[in-house]
Image (cartoon, rainbow, N blue to C red; front, side, top):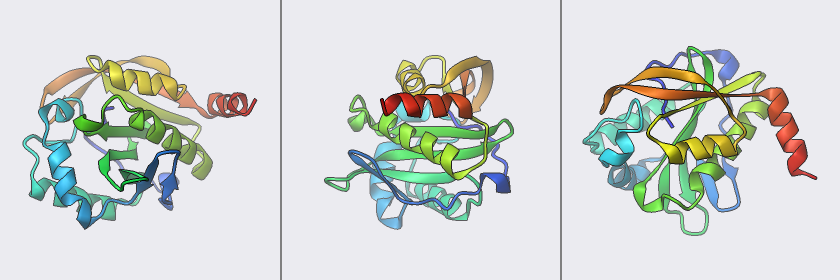
Length: 195
């Protein structure tokens, strides 16, 4: 997942940011107690190169700046992802206001890759976006070299919407694939899941 470099504040994207429990995860507000684990997982070039706004190296100062930004954010939502059974911090996810609209974003620490955590968190945030706001379209994007993120996006029902370029703090100007999920499709997918 790639979040855009320039977010915009839009009150129509304001969310109460409830704590969310999924089958295996708890999505909650990032806390001071997350700093050590956040630094450990985020200080990874493999993670940072796939994102727009994550610097590398990533230390305590960057983690504290992230926490401050998360507390001050008035639109969208930022979540820490933790394993419900153990409390282990595994990554972050959120809904970010961009010039195109609300965009889904996520990253998972490398020790937790290939466990389905990104998909589980993404499904919860897609549901939150459509149930707690009046948006008609939710956006997502990923680097063209990130097949794992592309799979997460597809599993959430997003449809390909084209390519673009993104300025990554680590990788510079990089090509991305853009995706969109409209409310009607989301409603259909939810009704199919109940059958």
